[in-house]
Length: 420
Image 1 (tube, one colour):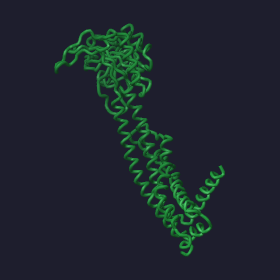
Image 2: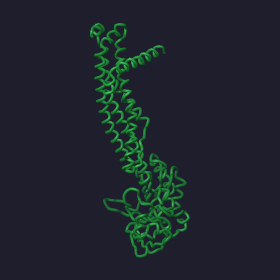
Image 3: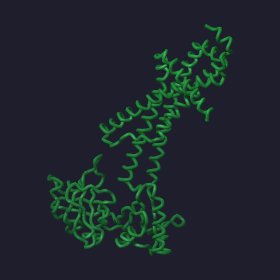
Image 4: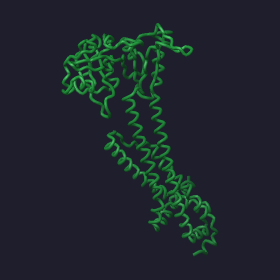
């Protein structure tokens, strides 16, 4: 314990002596640490911004794509010897199946049963072909549908096959002609020749044009609204996991539940997940961080060379001091430790300044993203980023301080004292 206290005291004293020595040449020391400050600032800013972009991208993909979904669809055909052969006896999923799946499969956050196809719609003399999605009322929560005015249809309306419909903003504009799209709410339009009351109009997309003339109607009793198709149209059951990481577990649970419910017919169901897009995003973010980390590493290396030059100059200026210390009993290891501590002290100070500068740069960079790209991106500071910045500073200090420290430790006492 006593030995440890002595060593700690010696290290603290070495740091104090080194700091006093470096303060005598403030400008030279400041310039030498500039590389470390810039390198650490670049590393912290780059990692904070990319982590923020990654968090935003994950949330965006989870909200606007099927990355958290497990999709269950009947398999109506298979390929045998290069030919497509139809399959019979496949299960057809119903609203009752969807309700049971929500209750009995562990890890289901939301569910929706959907059936999509084209349908002719008209209002007065205005006509269009809509991409009609027949679905359960739970789709509104499943995909976070943003209703601009009115409402989405209710479970009761689905249960009783109510003749209601929700229009996408672009389709509502097409049918309303020169009027406001919201004017259609409460009015009846015709879908495949059948009247449907418009109960809601969706908000237009925040970015880019609306891709389809979309509409939504209750699934039960709505199959006849869709245009005929050569291939059988069958509902898809979509289950949403509570998190992206839980998707694989939910898929396994869903397969087990389907096997219990349908027995051997489970082989005629496709159970798919859509995490490939997320994995591509993760790889892109990781590659970006590696490239930015490499650039920051090169800057730190340049800063380390500057620090090595300062320490070599310090060795030359303090040769007499080194000789006197060795003459009164300082060991080679003591001299070497002193200069290594000086090196780490300089890089540590530069790292601390660079860390603060990096946070400021990250805040400024993400503010630009929010202003110009209208993307709600904020810097994310992980503990690993701070530890990496500190570790980089210590590593640079040790690597580039070793040579000057060895030069100082190898000086002969008599020769060192004799030098002016």
